Length: 276
Length: 322
Image 1 (cartoon, rainbow over the protein chains, first blue to last red):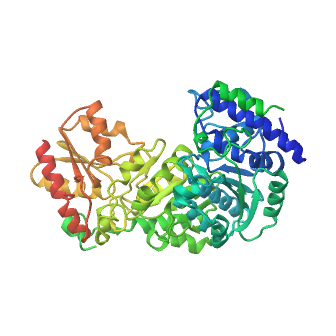
Image 2: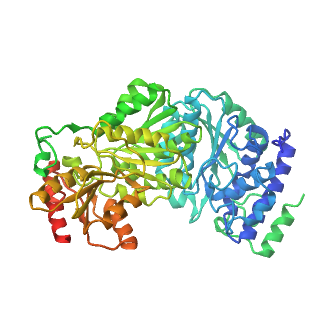
Image 3: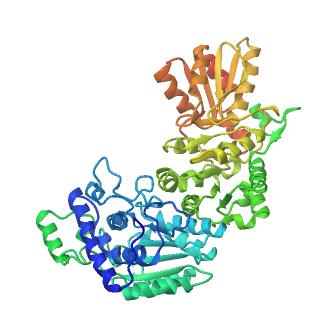
């Protein structure tokens, strides 16, 4: 089927709610995976896949596609939910997440999953690959854009800052990155584990055009994406304040839900909270 | 290179010395002139790796990523998804060591069409010392599923290996060096990925080399001949997609096998040959290379001698094995 497009923030929010259920389905079925960080960026993902990007579910490698790289590849349940709903592969695949033999690997791998551009999951691998995609498109004078989501714990990786230098140096204005600032990582509060603040100032200092938004407010996400298209001569960074586990009351702001699957009781409780 | 005289493999009258990295840079320019859809990445070593030749001819297709090898390798993997064929160059230590996880994940797990061409591999880096003498790159790259690994010996072979890497679909690692190496191939030589080539026929012992190792084996064959031992020399420029058939066929026709490389004696060519023979045709084997040590500063020829990577060492190993 062709790409589904949604215009209103209400429709986007409803889609995000439905796909949150698909995230939990995967992690519940697998009894393994990363719900917290998937729920923190899924609103951004819905805005990208249903409003911003051109993608081709029946022809994933179509050269006219915009590119998306989930640098925080452990949060792939959200990407799989998006891709399945857009028709890149059957929704039934979601129930096979992390279970041999599956097309939906525990961390995103392009070789397995239609619609996944590159392999990520080992932190820091995605952003520099997104930089390379943007360079490759520029060299060939292609008009497509590159989008990427990185995590805040992830940005403790040194290579993130290699990419942070490279993208402005090579004037990659076809690159738009979201920094998913949910404030938590496996060992707890990002500020306590290894403080990365001041985040927006760091990106500005590296030469990026920077905007700060609430990463769960679709109006702000869409405005930021429209703004990013106007940025010329440098890459755009959208610093998105988010809530880890967003949408499930008992998962919100709990580092303990970084990489833990819900048992049946919690799963049903979460689905009830996310009911239409 | 007068120094190579000590190692007995070069600097002799009539021996032409070839720069592998110059051959690489020249071939990139040729490919660019032919309209190949390549891009080249370097990490602040373009002058040393000779990608500077390409940078000068095709500035829009050359990306200096600064001293940032991890991001460079990942960027090349990303770029390859857009249809360009990226060549990535820096010293072997950084391409395969510092950036290892990016080679493994982004290039390897990602099955991306990236060509990693590293210079300054091995002991012949010389004065820079052990920190910069990568003696494990063949082993590291050989462990990555889907990676093709090449170690050419001279300029003619390097040029053809670079073209073959470009034409090959999938990731390729090419090991090049700082120092000039003796030319071993005639003008009509044709390199093929996965093909070993017999350089000298013999009957008693099979000497197997890659890179500079083959020149050392050829010199060793002269030493052995003087003692009445006839050595066959097999050059194996492909370390992964290795020519198993040719090695086994020749090994079965000899009484012993000796490998030689300026790399750890384990994990690289010696590792490949030991693994193959121990499973398919157990027989006397000696591996000449660095013996589980780090390198150190010195002239290349002094180091080759100090670490026992010489024609004399190969000849002694052959006699010990026979």
